[in-house]
Length: 301
Image 1 (cartoon, one colour):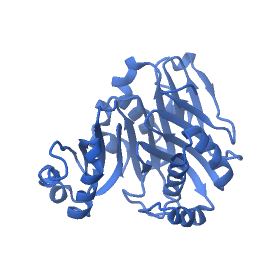
Image 2 (image 1 turned 90 degrees about the horizontal axis):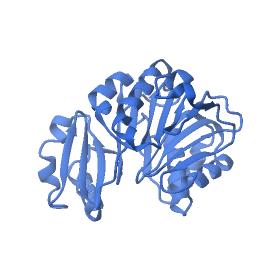
Image 3 (image 1 turned 90 degrees about the vertical axis):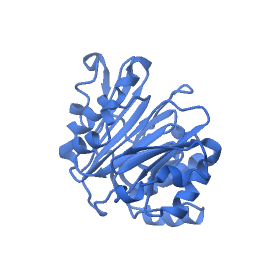
Image 4 (image 1 turned 120 degrees about the vertical axis):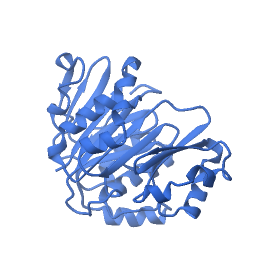
């Protein structure tokens, strides 16, 4: 069944509250997916710095001495530990070297997401526990997406939780099921994409990454997805400055959106939106089937 939320802020004065607002939205959707949960927060980019969010099943061992281990790749590297996750910050031009050293020296550590601004936290368990474990309520940002999962076709694991990230500052959450993901995965592997799970949502994320690598923006990539992806789906996607929503042509998965002068919000159900400021005056609508909704901080929608 799964529950999805998303929040794109137009009013910068709300940015300190993004984590708290998004957390409340996701916790409200708990009964739509009790298996695992995750949130992506897009904060303000740091000039010349990159972030790598990583996860470990054994953080006590895998995170021990991590900063010192990565220093040879970047002397300015910083590591912030958050339970089973850690956020590694490095010079943008040294980020790949840091990742390469991480793979070489600590192969058990998994990358959840990377880029200039995104941090991704996901684990098995209820939204309230994931939110509390990683201090999501205290996080500020410009936009974010979240997901609580009810697994139907793949294992309940941290790697199988949403959001899925397959490109820099790009991630996706999904409610539904793709029918052609195996064929798409084979095509994307031939194009050089790699996969860590058998989850159909990871294929959707990789497809969008591949399309944007060809020069498309998020809105254009989502439009292409309507032709190339088969099945039932509602996607909410984040990029460094963008936020997009699309439903398949049948649109059997529930979705509702709201817009005010301060924000654009998405929820699988309206109850996820009821505590947002000014919701009583918002324009509220159900997103149309096979229609791309796309907003970007850097350009007009």
